[in-house]
Length: 495
Image 1: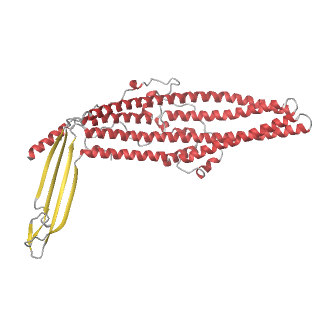
Image 2: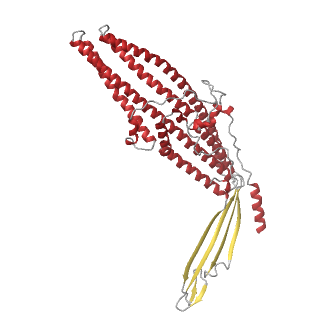
Image 3: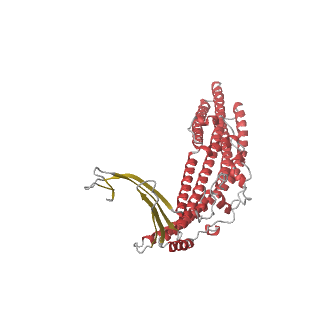
Protein backbone atom coordinates (compact mmCIF):
# COMPACT_ATOMS: atom_id res chain seq x y z
CA UNK A 1 0.00 0.00 0.00
CA UNK A 2 2.95 2.32 0.64
CA UNK A 3 4.23 2.32 -2.92
CA UNK A 4 0.95 3.40 -4.63
CA UNK A 5 0.70 6.27 -2.15
CA UNK A 6 4.26 7.41 -2.84
CA UNK A 7 3.58 7.14 -6.56
CA UNK A 8 0.40 9.18 -6.14
CA UNK A 9 2.27 11.93 -4.25
CA UNK A 10 4.99 12.11 -6.87
CA UNK A 11 2.46 12.32 -9.68
CA UNK A 12 0.44 15.05 -8.02
CA UNK A 13 3.53 17.11 -7.24
CA UNK A 14 4.48 17.00 -10.90
CA UNK A 15 1.01 18.28 -11.78
CA UNK A 16 0.95 21.03 -9.14
CA UNK A 17 2.42 23.54 -11.59
CA UNK A 18 -0.77 23.39 -13.68
CA UNK A 19 -2.27 26.57 -12.26
CA UNK A 20 -5.58 27.55 -13.78
CA UNK A 21 -6.63 31.12 -14.49
CA UNK A 22 -5.06 33.84 -16.63
CA UNK A 23 -1.36 34.66 -16.39
CA UNK A 24 -1.03 38.32 -15.45
CA UNK A 25 0.80 40.73 -17.73
CA UNK A 26 1.01 44.42 -16.87
CA UNK A 27 -0.96 46.54 -19.40
CA UNK A 28 1.13 48.41 -21.93
CA UNK A 29 1.04 52.21 -21.92
CA UNK A 30 -0.86 52.31 -25.23
CA UNK A 31 -3.84 50.54 -23.63
CA UNK A 32 -3.85 53.14 -20.84
CA UNK A 33 -4.05 56.17 -23.12
CA UNK A 34 -0.66 57.57 -22.09
CA UNK A 35 0.62 60.24 -24.55
CA UNK A 36 4.24 60.59 -25.59
CA UNK A 37 4.71 64.05 -24.07
CA UNK A 38 3.01 66.64 -21.88
CA UNK A 39 1.13 69.34 -23.73
CA UNK A 40 2.34 72.17 -21.50
CA UNK A 41 6.05 71.54 -21.34
CA UNK A 42 8.65 69.23 -22.86
CA UNK A 43 10.71 68.39 -19.79
CA UNK A 44 14.12 66.84 -19.43
CA UNK A 45 14.55 63.37 -17.96
CA UNK A 46 13.55 63.02 -14.33
CA UNK A 47 16.26 63.01 -11.70
CA UNK A 48 15.13 60.30 -9.29
CA UNK A 49 17.47 61.50 -6.54
CA UNK A 50 16.21 65.09 -6.71
CA UNK A 51 12.61 63.87 -6.88
CA UNK A 52 12.97 61.75 -3.75
CA UNK A 53 13.88 64.78 -1.58
CA UNK A 54 12.31 67.50 -3.69
CA UNK A 55 11.52 69.85 -0.77
CA UNK A 56 15.25 70.34 -0.18
CA UNK A 57 15.37 72.40 -3.38
CA UNK A 58 13.66 75.19 -1.38
CA UNK A 59 16.81 75.53 0.76
CA UNK A 60 14.85 75.96 4.00
CA UNK A 61 16.30 74.03 6.97
CA UNK A 62 13.18 74.64 9.05
CA UNK A 63 11.02 73.03 6.38
CA UNK A 64 13.47 70.12 6.11
CA UNK A 65 13.12 69.49 9.84
CA UNK A 66 9.33 69.56 9.69
CA UNK A 67 9.29 67.04 6.84
CA UNK A 68 11.48 64.66 8.82
CA UNK A 69 9.18 64.99 11.83
CA UNK A 70 6.15 64.31 9.66
CA UNK A 71 7.75 61.22 8.10
CA UNK A 72 8.71 59.87 11.53
CA UNK A 73 5.66 60.81 13.61
CA UNK A 74 2.63 61.27 11.35
CA UNK A 75 -0.20 59.01 12.45
CA UNK A 76 -1.58 58.45 8.94
CA UNK A 77 1.82 57.08 7.97
CA UNK A 78 1.78 54.91 11.11
CA UNK A 79 -1.58 53.49 10.04
CA UNK A 80 -0.14 52.75 6.60
CA UNK A 81 2.77 50.89 8.21
CA UNK A 82 0.30 48.80 10.22
CA UNK A 83 -1.67 47.94 7.08
CA UNK A 84 1.56 46.94 5.36
CA UNK A 85 2.40 44.64 8.28
CA UNK A 86 -1.05 43.07 8.02
CA UNK A 87 -0.58 42.43 4.31
CA UNK A 88 2.81 40.86 4.98
CA UNK A 89 1.29 38.47 7.51
CA UNK A 90 -1.52 37.63 5.08
CA UNK A 91 1.13 36.59 2.55
CA UNK A 92 2.81 34.39 5.15
CA UNK A 93 -0.53 32.76 5.97
CA UNK A 94 -1.22 32.09 2.30
CA UNK A 95 2.23 30.58 1.77
CA UNK A 96 1.83 28.33 4.81
CA UNK A 97 -0.66 26.26 2.81
CA UNK A 98 2.24 24.87 0.77
CA UNK A 99 3.37 22.69 3.67
CA UNK A 100 1.50 20.04 5.67
CA UNK A 101 -0.40 20.95 8.79
CA UNK A 102 0.76 18.82 11.73
CA UNK A 103 -0.79 18.60 15.18
CA UNK A 104 0.10 16.54 18.21
CA UNK A 105 -1.87 15.41 21.23
CA UNK A 106 -1.17 13.42 24.34
CA UNK A 107 -3.10 12.26 27.36
CA UNK A 108 -2.50 10.51 30.63
CA UNK A 109 -4.80 9.38 33.39
CA UNK A 110 -5.72 6.84 35.98
CA UNK A 111 -8.59 4.39 35.44
CA UNK A 112 -10.40 2.45 38.10
CA UNK A 113 -13.51 0.35 38.30
CA UNK A 114 -14.84 -2.30 40.66
CA UNK A 115 -16.61 -5.23 39.03
CA UNK A 116 -19.11 -7.48 40.82
CA UNK A 117 -16.68 -10.39 40.88
CA UNK A 118 -13.84 -8.27 42.22
CA UNK A 119 -12.24 -7.82 38.77
CA UNK A 120 -10.73 -4.40 38.12
CA UNK A 121 -11.80 -3.04 34.78
CA UNK A 122 -10.47 -0.13 32.76
CA UNK A 123 -12.64 2.51 31.14
CA UNK A 124 -13.22 0.19 28.15
CA UNK A 125 -14.39 -2.70 30.30
CA UNK A 126 -11.20 -4.72 30.00
CA UNK A 127 -9.96 -6.67 33.03
CA UNK A 128 -6.70 -5.20 34.29
CA UNK A 129 -6.57 -6.91 37.73
CA UNK A 130 -8.46 -8.63 40.50
CA UNK A 131 -9.21 -7.38 43.95
CA UNK A 132 -12.00 -7.87 46.32
CA UNK A 133 -11.50 -4.31 47.52
CA UNK A 134 -11.11 -2.55 44.11
CA UNK A 135 -8.14 -1.49 41.95
CA UNK A 136 -6.74 1.09 39.52
CA UNK A 137 -4.32 1.49 36.59
CA UNK A 138 -2.55 4.20 34.59
CA UNK A 139 -3.12 4.82 30.90
CA UNK A 140 -1.06 7.00 28.52
CA UNK A 141 -1.47 7.83 24.83
CA UNK A 142 0.05 10.08 22.21
CA UNK A 143 -0.65 10.82 18.57
CA UNK A 144 0.46 12.90 15.60
CA UNK A 145 -1.94 14.01 12.88
CA UNK A 146 -0.98 15.55 9.56
CA UNK A 147 -2.90 16.85 6.56
CA UNK A 148 -1.63 18.26 3.30
CA UNK A 149 -3.45 19.77 0.35
CA UNK A 150 -1.70 19.11 -2.95
CA UNK A 151 -1.83 22.28 -5.06
CA UNK A 152 -3.05 20.30 -8.04
CA UNK A 153 -4.54 23.18 -10.04
CA UNK A 154 -2.81 26.17 -8.45
CA UNK A 155 -5.32 27.30 -5.84
CA UNK A 156 -2.59 27.88 -3.29
CA UNK A 157 -0.20 29.35 -5.84
CA UNK A 158 -2.78 31.83 -7.09
CA UNK A 159 -3.70 32.74 -3.52
CA UNK A 160 -0.06 33.45 -2.74
CA UNK A 161 0.25 35.42 -5.98
CA UNK A 162 -2.77 37.55 -5.02
CA UNK A 163 -1.47 38.03 -1.47
CA UNK A 164 1.93 39.09 -2.76
CA UNK A 165 0.30 41.66 -5.06
CA UNK A 166 -1.78 42.87 -2.11
CA UNK A 167 1.42 43.28 -0.08
CA UNK A 168 3.02 45.31 -2.87
CA UNK A 169 -0.15 47.40 -3.20
CA UNK A 170 -0.05 48.09 0.54
CA UNK A 171 3.56 49.18 0.22
CA UNK A 172 2.66 51.64 -2.52
CA UNK A 173 -0.36 52.78 -0.52
CA UNK A 174 2.01 53.66 2.32
CA UNK A 175 4.27 55.46 -0.16
CA UNK A 176 1.26 57.38 -1.48
CA UNK A 177 0.31 58.44 2.06
CA UNK A 178 3.87 59.60 2.62
CA UNK A 179 3.89 61.74 -0.54
CA UNK A 180 0.56 63.28 0.46
CA UNK A 181 1.76 64.08 3.98
CA UNK A 182 4.95 65.66 2.66
CA UNK A 183 3.04 67.77 0.13
CA UNK A 184 0.49 68.88 2.74
CA UNK A 185 3.26 69.81 5.18
CA UNK A 186 4.94 71.93 2.51
CA UNK A 187 1.65 73.60 1.56
CA UNK A 188 0.84 74.55 5.13
CA UNK A 189 4.37 75.76 5.79
CA UNK A 190 4.18 78.03 2.75
CA UNK A 191 0.73 79.21 3.84
CA UNK A 192 2.10 80.03 7.30
CA UNK A 193 5.04 82.01 5.90
CA UNK A 194 2.72 83.81 3.47
CA UNK A 195 0.38 84.75 6.33
CA UNK A 196 3.35 86.18 8.22
CA UNK A 197 4.36 88.20 5.16
CA UNK A 198 0.82 89.47 4.70
CA UNK A 199 0.65 90.41 8.38
CA UNK A 200 3.84 92.41 7.97
CA UNK A 201 2.38 94.22 4.96
CA UNK A 202 -0.93 94.83 6.71
CA UNK A 203 0.72 96.25 9.83
CA UNK A 204 2.98 98.50 7.81
CA UNK A 205 -0.04 99.70 5.87
CA UNK A 206 -1.88 100.16 9.16
CA UNK A 207 0.87 102.52 10.31
CA UNK A 208 0.51 104.43 7.03
CA UNK A 209 -3.25 104.64 7.52
CA UNK A 210 -2.66 106.05 11.00
CA UNK A 211 -0.31 108.68 9.52
CA UNK A 212 -2.97 109.55 6.94
CA UNK A 213 -5.51 110.04 9.70
CA UNK A 214 -3.13 112.28 11.64
CA UNK A 215 -2.44 114.38 8.53
CA UNK A 216 -6.15 114.64 7.70
CA UNK A 217 -7.00 115.63 11.30
CA UNK A 218 -4.30 118.32 11.28
CA UNK A 219 -5.53 119.73 7.99
CA UNK A 220 -9.12 119.79 9.24
CA UNK A 221 -8.05 121.59 12.41
CA UNK A 222 -6.12 124.07 10.27
CA UNK A 223 -9.24 124.71 8.22
CA UNK A 224 -7.57 123.59 5.01
CA UNK A 225 -10.05 120.76 4.24
CA UNK A 226 -13.45 119.64 5.35
CA UNK A 227 -14.04 116.88 7.89
CA UNK A 228 -14.75 114.55 4.94
CA UNK A 229 -11.02 113.81 4.64
CA UNK A 230 -10.81 112.92 8.30
CA UNK A 231 -13.78 110.52 8.09
CA UNK A 232 -12.36 108.83 5.00
CA UNK A 233 -9.05 108.40 6.84
CA UNK A 234 -10.87 106.90 9.83
CA UNK A 235 -12.68 104.46 7.54
CA UNK A 236 -9.38 103.45 5.91
CA UNK A 237 -7.75 102.83 9.30
CA UNK A 238 -10.68 100.75 10.56
CA UNK A 239 -10.82 98.62 7.42
CA UNK A 240 -7.10 97.99 7.57
CA UNK A 241 -7.32 97.05 11.25
CA UNK A 242 -10.22 94.65 10.55
CA UNK A 243 -8.17 92.77 7.93
CA UNK A 244 -5.47 91.70 10.41
CA UNK A 245 -7.52 89.18 12.52
CA UNK A 246 -8.51 87.30 9.37
CA UNK A 247 -4.87 86.87 8.36
CA UNK A 248 -3.98 85.82 11.90
CA UNK A 249 -6.69 83.16 11.73
CA UNK A 250 -5.15 81.76 8.54
CA UNK A 251 -1.73 81.69 10.21
CA UNK A 252 -3.06 79.86 13.27
CA UNK A 253 -4.85 77.31 11.10
CA UNK A 254 -1.67 76.58 9.13
CA UNK A 255 0.44 76.21 12.28
CA UNK A 256 -2.12 73.95 13.93
CA UNK A 257 -2.27 71.76 10.84
CA UNK A 258 1.53 71.47 10.79
CA UNK A 259 1.46 70.31 14.41
CA UNK A 260 -1.02 67.53 13.62
CA UNK A 261 0.90 66.51 10.49
CA UNK A 262 4.01 66.06 12.61
CA UNK A 263 2.09 63.93 15.13
CA UNK A 264 1.77 66.55 17.85
CA UNK A 265 -0.97 68.54 19.54
CA UNK A 266 -1.49 72.13 18.32
CA UNK A 267 0.10 74.83 20.39
CA UNK A 268 3.56 74.42 21.83
CA UNK A 269 4.71 72.15 18.99
CA UNK A 270 4.81 75.04 16.50
CA UNK A 271 5.79 77.84 18.86
CA UNK A 272 9.13 78.32 17.12
CA UNK A 273 7.37 78.82 13.78
CA UNK A 274 5.59 81.91 15.11
CA UNK A 275 8.79 83.88 14.51
CA UNK A 276 8.28 85.42 11.04
CA UNK A 277 10.42 84.13 8.17
CA UNK A 278 10.20 84.65 4.41
CA UNK A 279 8.40 82.35 2.01
CA UNK A 280 10.89 79.83 0.55
CA UNK A 281 12.21 80.48 -2.94
CA UNK A 282 11.15 78.01 -5.60
CA UNK A 283 13.60 76.53 -8.11
CA UNK A 284 13.22 77.92 -11.61
CA UNK A 285 13.83 74.78 -13.68
CA UNK A 286 12.18 71.45 -12.94
CA UNK A 287 12.71 68.28 -14.98
CA UNK A 288 9.31 66.72 -15.66
CA UNK A 289 10.28 63.79 -17.87
CA UNK A 290 7.66 62.20 -20.09
CA UNK A 291 4.18 60.90 -19.17
CA UNK A 292 5.42 57.30 -19.13
CA UNK A 293 7.60 58.28 -16.17
CA UNK A 294 4.42 58.93 -14.20
CA UNK A 295 3.63 55.21 -14.26
CA UNK A 296 7.03 54.53 -12.73
CA UNK A 297 7.13 57.35 -10.16
CA UNK A 298 3.56 57.74 -8.90
CA UNK A 299 2.94 55.33 -6.00
CA UNK A 300 -0.84 55.53 -6.43
CA UNK A 301 -0.47 54.38 -10.05
CA UNK A 302 1.72 51.48 -9.00
CA UNK A 303 -0.71 50.61 -6.23
CA UNK A 304 -3.56 50.44 -8.76
CA UNK A 305 -1.46 48.21 -11.03
CA UNK A 306 -0.76 45.82 -8.15
CA UNK A 307 -4.47 45.76 -7.28
CA UNK A 308 -5.15 44.69 -10.87
CA UNK A 309 -2.55 41.92 -10.53
CA UNK A 310 -4.21 40.68 -7.33
CA UNK A 311 -7.67 40.70 -8.91
CA UNK A 312 -6.34 38.74 -11.90
CA UNK A 313 -4.73 36.11 -9.64
CA UNK A 314 -7.99 35.65 -7.77
CA UNK A 315 -9.68 34.57 -10.99
CA UNK A 316 -7.46 31.49 -10.81
CA UNK A 317 -8.34 30.97 -7.15
CA UNK A 318 -12.03 30.99 -7.99
CA UNK A 319 -11.57 28.82 -11.09
CA UNK A 320 -9.59 26.16 -9.20
CA UNK A 321 -12.75 25.24 -7.30
CA UNK A 322 -14.13 23.80 -10.55
CA UNK A 323 -11.34 21.21 -10.66
CA UNK A 324 -10.52 18.19 -8.47
CA UNK A 325 -8.93 18.87 -5.10
CA UNK A 326 -6.50 16.34 -3.65
CA UNK A 327 -5.48 16.13 -0.01
CA UNK A 328 -3.47 13.63 2.00
CA UNK A 329 -3.96 12.98 5.70
CA UNK A 330 -2.53 10.56 8.19
CA UNK A 331 -1.95 9.89 11.83
CA UNK A 332 0.42 7.97 14.08
CA UNK A 333 -0.50 6.97 17.62
CA UNK A 334 0.48 4.84 20.60
CA UNK A 335 -1.01 3.93 23.96
CA UNK A 336 0.19 2.01 27.02
CA UNK A 337 -0.46 1.43 30.68
CA UNK A 338 2.90 2.86 31.70
CA UNK A 339 5.23 5.55 30.44
CA UNK A 340 8.04 3.04 30.02
CA UNK A 341 6.06 0.96 27.55
CA UNK A 342 4.73 3.95 25.61
CA UNK A 343 5.91 3.42 22.06
CA UNK A 344 6.04 -0.36 22.21
CA UNK A 345 3.04 -0.55 19.94
CA UNK A 346 2.56 2.16 17.29
CA UNK A 347 -0.39 2.33 14.97
CA UNK A 348 -0.91 4.65 12.02
CA UNK A 349 -2.94 5.36 8.92
CA UNK A 350 -2.53 7.27 5.67
CA UNK A 351 -5.37 8.45 3.46
CA UNK A 352 -5.66 10.23 0.17
CA UNK A 353 -8.82 12.18 -0.59
CA UNK A 354 -9.84 13.34 -4.07
CA UNK A 355 -12.88 15.61 -4.24
CA UNK A 356 -14.62 16.96 -7.32
CA UNK A 357 -17.51 19.38 -7.43
CA UNK A 358 -20.45 17.83 -9.27
CA UNK A 359 -23.26 20.32 -8.86
CA UNK A 360 -23.77 23.49 -6.83
CA UNK A 361 -26.39 25.30 -8.88
CA UNK A 362 -23.76 27.30 -10.78
CA UNK A 363 -22.50 29.10 -7.65
CA UNK A 364 -18.81 28.34 -8.25
CA UNK A 365 -18.97 29.31 -11.93
CA UNK A 366 -20.73 32.50 -10.87
CA UNK A 367 -17.88 33.29 -8.48
CA UNK A 368 -15.43 32.93 -11.36
CA UNK A 369 -17.44 35.37 -13.48
CA UNK A 370 -17.72 37.75 -10.53
CA UNK A 371 -13.94 37.74 -10.09
CA UNK A 372 -13.47 38.34 -13.82
CA UNK A 373 -15.75 41.36 -13.47
CA UNK A 374 -13.69 42.50 -10.48
CA UNK A 375 -10.54 42.28 -12.61
CA UNK A 376 -12.17 44.38 -15.34
CA UNK A 377 -13.12 46.93 -12.72
CA UNK A 378 -9.55 46.92 -11.39
CA UNK A 379 -8.25 47.63 -14.89
CA UNK A 380 -10.62 50.57 -15.25
CA UNK A 381 -9.51 51.85 -11.83
CA UNK A 382 -5.88 51.51 -12.91
CA UNK A 383 -6.45 53.40 -16.14
CA UNK A 384 -8.41 56.09 -14.28
CA UNK A 385 -5.56 56.50 -11.79
CA UNK A 386 -3.09 56.91 -14.65
CA UNK A 387 -5.22 59.56 -16.34
CA UNK A 388 -5.78 61.45 -13.09
CA UNK A 389 -2.02 61.39 -12.50
CA UNK A 390 -1.42 62.89 -15.94
CA UNK A 391 -4.11 65.48 -15.23
CA UNK A 392 -2.38 66.41 -11.98
CA UNK A 393 0.92 66.98 -13.79
CA UNK A 394 -0.68 69.04 -16.55
CA UNK A 395 -2.56 71.17 -14.02
CA UNK A 396 0.60 71.70 -11.98
CA UNK A 397 2.55 72.73 -15.09
CA UNK A 398 -0.13 75.28 -15.98
CA UNK A 399 -0.21 76.58 -12.41
CA UNK A 400 3.58 76.95 -12.36
CA UNK A 401 3.66 78.78 -15.71
CA UNK A 402 0.82 81.13 -14.81
CA UNK A 403 2.20 81.85 -11.34
CA UNK A 404 5.50 82.95 -12.86
CA UNK A 405 3.66 85.23 -15.29
CA UNK A 406 1.62 86.74 -12.45
CA UNK A 407 4.76 87.45 -10.43
CA UNK A 408 6.31 89.24 -13.42
CA UNK A 409 3.28 91.48 -13.93
CA UNK A 410 2.69 92.12 -10.23
CA UNK A 411 6.28 93.28 -9.85
CA UNK A 412 5.50 95.95 -12.43
CA UNK A 413 2.22 96.78 -10.68
CA UNK A 414 3.92 97.06 -7.31
CA UNK A 415 6.59 99.39 -8.65
CA UNK A 416 3.99 101.63 -10.27
CA UNK A 417 1.71 101.60 -7.21
CA UNK A 418 4.62 102.45 -4.92
CA UNK A 419 5.59 105.45 -7.05
CA UNK A 420 1.97 106.55 -7.27
CA UNK A 421 1.52 106.37 -3.49
CA UNK A 422 4.65 108.42 -2.86
CA UNK A 423 3.51 111.13 -5.30
CA UNK A 424 -0.04 111.17 -3.92
CA UNK A 425 1.18 111.54 -0.32
CA UNK A 426 3.56 114.38 -1.11
CA UNK A 427 0.91 116.18 -3.18
CA UNK A 428 -1.72 115.78 -0.46
CA UNK A 429 0.62 117.11 2.18
CA UNK A 430 1.30 120.09 -0.10
CA UNK A 431 -2.41 120.60 -0.68
CA UNK A 432 -2.15 119.87 -4.39
CA UNK A 433 -4.61 116.95 -4.41
CA UNK A 434 -7.55 115.67 -2.41
CA UNK A 435 -7.61 112.88 0.11
CA UNK A 436 -9.57 110.55 -2.17
CA UNK A 437 -6.64 110.47 -4.58
CA UNK A 438 -4.28 109.61 -1.73
CA UNK A 439 -6.68 106.95 -0.46
CA UNK A 440 -6.95 105.35 -3.90
CA UNK A 441 -3.16 105.31 -4.29
CA UNK A 442 -2.64 103.77 -0.86
CA UNK A 443 -5.23 101.07 -1.51
CA UNK A 444 -3.61 100.27 -4.86
CA UNK A 445 -0.23 99.92 -3.16
CA UNK A 446 -1.64 97.62 -0.49
CA UNK A 447 -3.33 95.48 -3.14
CA UNK A 448 -0.13 95.30 -5.22
CA UNK A 449 2.07 94.34 -2.23
CA UNK A 450 -0.38 91.78 -0.98
CA UNK A 451 -0.96 90.38 -4.47
CA UNK A 452 2.77 90.12 -5.16
CA UNK A 453 3.39 88.25 -1.90
CA UNK A 454 0.52 85.90 -2.66
CA UNK A 455 1.71 85.33 -6.23
CA UNK A 456 5.21 84.48 -5.06
CA UNK A 457 3.79 82.00 -2.57
CA UNK A 458 1.52 80.60 -5.29
CA UNK A 459 4.59 80.06 -7.43
CA UNK A 460 6.22 78.02 -4.67
CA UNK A 461 2.96 76.15 -4.11
CA UNK A 462 2.79 75.37 -7.83
CA UNK A 463 6.30 73.92 -7.71
CA UNK A 464 5.35 71.79 -4.71
CA UNK A 465 2.19 70.71 -6.54
CA UNK A 466 4.27 69.74 -9.58
CA UNK A 467 6.77 67.70 -7.57
CA UNK A 468 3.92 65.93 -5.81
CA UNK A 469 2.13 65.26 -9.10
CA UNK A 470 5.31 63.76 -10.51
CA UNK A 471 5.35 61.31 -7.60
CA UNK A 472 8.19 62.68 -5.51
CA UNK A 473 8.84 61.98 -1.87
CA UNK A 474 8.65 58.20 -1.47
CA UNK A 475 11.61 56.84 -3.40
CA UNK A 476 13.73 56.36 -0.27
CA UNK A 477 11.12 54.13 1.43
CA UNK A 478 11.28 50.33 1.37
CA UNK A 479 8.17 49.80 -0.73
CA UNK A 480 7.88 46.30 -2.26
CA UNK A 481 8.95 46.05 -5.86
CA UNK A 482 6.31 44.72 -8.28
CA UNK A 483 7.11 41.95 -10.68
CA UNK A 484 8.62 39.51 -8.17
CA UNK A 485 7.93 35.87 -8.88
CA UNK A 486 5.27 33.93 -7.04
CA UNK A 487 7.03 31.38 -4.84
CA UNK A 488 6.69 27.69 -5.65
CA UNK A 489 7.80 26.63 -2.17
CA UNK A 490 7.79 28.11 1.33
CA UNK A 491 11.38 29.31 1.04
CA UNK A 492 10.19 31.78 -1.58
CA UNK A 493 8.28 33.76 1.02
CA UNK A 494 9.67 37.06 2.29
CA UNK A 495 11.49 37.13 5.59
